[in-house]
Length: 153
Image (tube, rainbow, N blue to C red; front, side, top):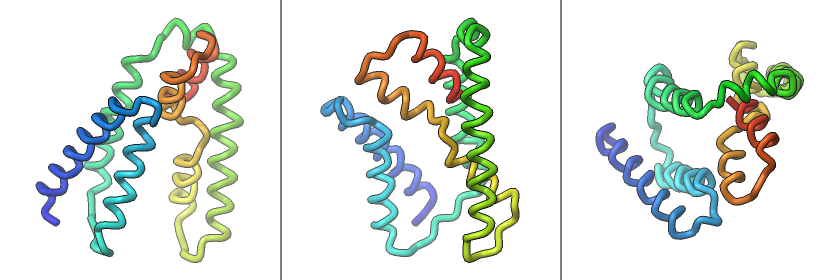
């Protein structure tokens, strides 16, 4: 599939997922987008899409991090820093190391240890997107909301 067509299809899917989320607000937006991603994967029929990792980082991950950084309340970060560090260090750090070492030992292919640790970091428990989606549907105390949003940052 041509890259230009692929980008247009993905943007169209993004628009449709937002429309579906507006029509059915009980369904979280990340879930709708996950279903669309799975559908695209199954419709691809074994064709490979190669995307340069640097482009993915520059055009997908960087804007997401920038947006999260803009929504960060610096005063809350300073106020709850000990709790945030307490949640980040054991949760993310230990998960990264354990999953990385387990992946290195059980995967049938030979991966560098750095790639295994990257896998562990990607599966770490801090997911601000999931919490933000949940916080739109449920009410959390302001303190808990600030801590969990900042911990995911």
